[in-house]
Length: 129
Image (cartoon, rainbow, N blue to C red):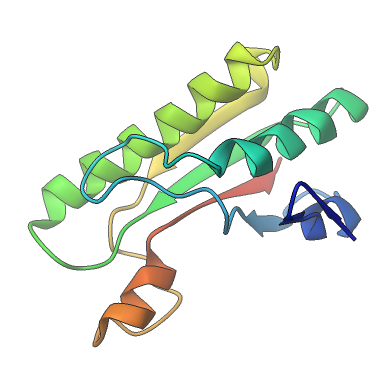
């Protein structure tokens, strides 16, 4: 079942403490912390989930691939976390329910050997706290 063409997988997952959900449809302009149009659909589902479960707090994790200087990647991943946080707060989620950190390229989920797998490493996820 999809809402506006975006899978609702994370809504079906158990919202238990420690579970991490990847926001695979939240995308950014290359090298920037600017959301690509369409990313809002999945973020709106996060807002909806947080409104329905007012006791939940989330920890946002920003990740990049390993291309470029690692210090810049850490800053970029942090800036992307801040962009997501600002969006959620603007939609009514209380700021004290959202924390986060940028990890740069230190936590890959795929190889950095080619463009396709590097793309998987560029992601924002959230963990239920």
